[in-house]
Length: 225
Image (cartoon, rainbow, N blue to C red):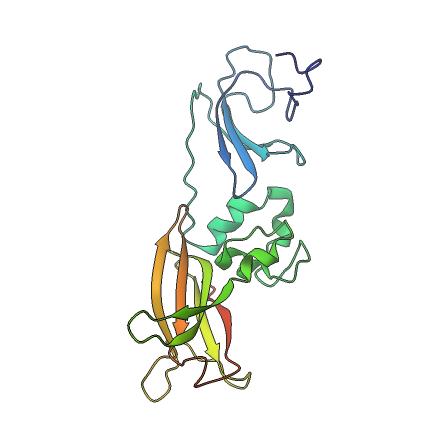
């Protein structure tokens, strides 16, 4: 199908030599490919590994020149540290916006929170990080508890996401800060997802009737190396 005449085809990156092995990183909005350079036209990224935005909105980034003829590529979407997450989600010309406390997309979430909660640092998607509050009825007792379901990134050496609970806004409690030796939250389930993410469901240990005005929030803990 000819991109010049078909509305179904869009040219995202051109000036290449012999691209092969395209892989999509949908969560990061990136496309990766290798270029064998076998046509010998001197295209950008020939005999190397490149990437760009899936909509072509940033210049092609040549990540490495191999000096050989790569034919295929695979990508590991897991992140074990904040710096690895930055390298995955930020184009090189925007890495200056990748500071932990920065909010380059202006959606009210700092980069460290975007990392921990599985949202994109350059896209206004903070609503996806809010989680879901609902009422949970225990089948055995019939008691009703406020519950909280949220998404978080796991496997990070320098970052963790902790759910917290409060009956007012004076003190927030989590498993690291028990009350009389008892945690405020009971884990109901964990759903393992791709790319080091998981969906967690917790409930309060207090029923709706016994403790009105209960609140949930997420705390992102970061330890700089």
